[in-house]
Amino acid sequence: MVSNITGINRVAWNSIWKLNDVVDDLGKSIHAVRDLLQPHMRPEQFQALMFAINRDYDIPHFWDSMSPNQSASKEWIGHELGKVKFKRKKKKRIQLVGGWFGFPLINILLDIFKGDLDFIENIDLDENAISVFHKIANEKKLDKDVRLIGTCANFLDNNPRSHTLDILINTSSEHMPPLPQLLKDKNPKMGCLYVLQSNNMHHLEEHINCVNSEDELAETSEITDVLYKGNLTMANGYKRFMVIGYQ
Image (cartoon, rainbow, N blue to C red):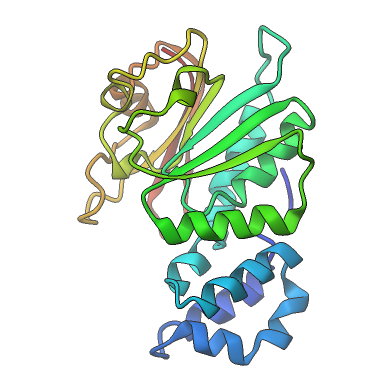
């Protein structure tokens, strides 16, 4: 698995997260210790953090995106997706559904597929999250042969790229309707690979589509050709489930 994909070590992340419990403005507090924090972060992540702070974005959510739990769930995708043997050798077209800030998952996808990528599109409802995504992508100075596209939209809206995908990744299935409803009228390409994660955190109001097992996730998503399914117990005691396969 990729190490330190979030760009910040666990001790530094936990120290700032604990600070979030006792201050009114996490962004101002981070800005005050930015010189101490910078050596512990990847340059693009640090610049994106300062970008978000200067625009008064939701800093606790951005910081949460770099948590050890988030890191573990994205590393898990990399570990299992990297084992998939694709039938056709071609540059992959990938969409992230509700992809939030896009990173660190995109770092993993870039590592797995190397130059075999046409585009990665990150779709999210949060305009600020997409702005941060663009900032990180620009700071990384990626090869122009890989298109990183940030789209602020509802995935249910029409999107011409949705008909051309090789891989669709949804790590936030608990926040949205089951996959068959998401794909209604999308006309996904035959052979599109689905990488899906959900959890059993039913107590959160925003979680409208939790599941209790990886089998339930596969069933509700109508994944009939399962390449991988499993679960991961997170630090908070809840389980995250993952299914990789075809409909």
